[in-house]
Length: 241
Ligand SMILES: N[C@@H](CCC(=O)N[C@@H](CS)C(=O)NCC(=O)O)C(=O)O
Image (cartoon, rainbow, N blue to C red; front, side, top):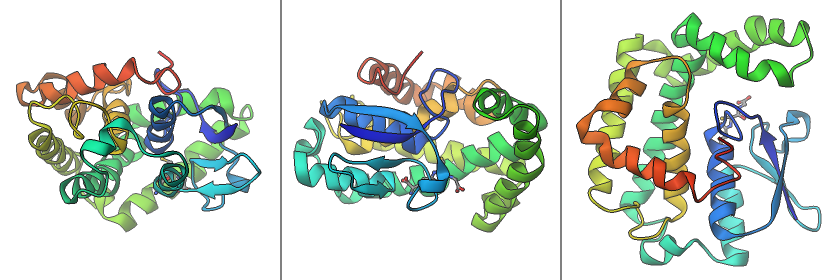
């Protein structure tokens, strides 16, 4: 049994982390047995979630490396056969999701507004030690995330600048998806799990933002909304409702 570390139920998802949700969806679609465990960063090989313990005790971090290893051992997802995850366009979509849209989401949640941060705090609080946990999140973790966002670059833009970049990313990915049900074609592939998780992270967040408003209402992004709805049924592990 694979143990996935990164469980942190938030807003209908099994984790606030899109990288955890991506991996869990991949496992659900692949049909490999797994169990979800809390994050426990002290044992995370790369200091990030998700990380996994594979049968036999092998420990591994990074959702992309974990999925690549599982693909080598068990094969990919149905969609990967039609359009492999290393297809040049899908590679660029993944980088857009993980190196740009992710940081826009992170910045919006943690430093974009106090209302957004309060929503993060409310989701994380049940998993934290009382009193000291929320204080640490507010006065240690939030400033640390702000520094990360500034170092990456996204955190240097105004909230409007962050939103316009994220919406541009979504429009570009929507354009790549076109009328296809999945980026990989008729069946979901590895990159679709990353897209589903990224969309979920924007759509379900309880504090409104221009990024979420665009994704919820822009007629040009209807195909992304439809993909997110389609994906929910495929991943009972990640979409806990
Ligand atoms: N490339 C990594 C990214 C994972 C990642 O950034 N995880 C975030 C949560 S969404 C994390 O653990 N952040 C904690 C930190 O940076 O200290 C992957 O695909 O797994």
